Amino acid sequence: MALGWFEVEKAPNGQYYFNLKAGNAETILFSEQYTTMDGCNNGIASVQSNSGEEANYERKESNKGKPHFVLKAKNHQVIGHSEKYESASGMENGIKSVMTNGSTSTIKDKTT
Image (cartoon, rainbow, N blue to C red):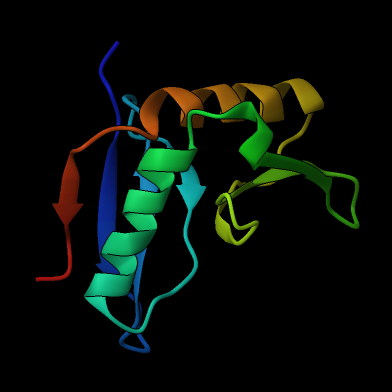
């Protein structure tokens, strides 16, 4: 199974964000927006160092009852969030995928 990668992009407002992609190119984690590329790179580094620990995932439910999760750093700051899933088992599979792919060092810069 191929490891995933991070894709860095620039939002229409000029801020930077990243998505973590699984080996099948599906987006499995979305970042917040950062005002600088350095901030975005720090966010990626935080995912790389925090994604392997089960305790850093907070399971949630949307107001429409859809399970999803956030990945938090050791200081409890949110560093990424998932899509909304149809089932709790789908969400758990998403967490496993982030745990597997989050340590990747492959970063694709799509800002240029």
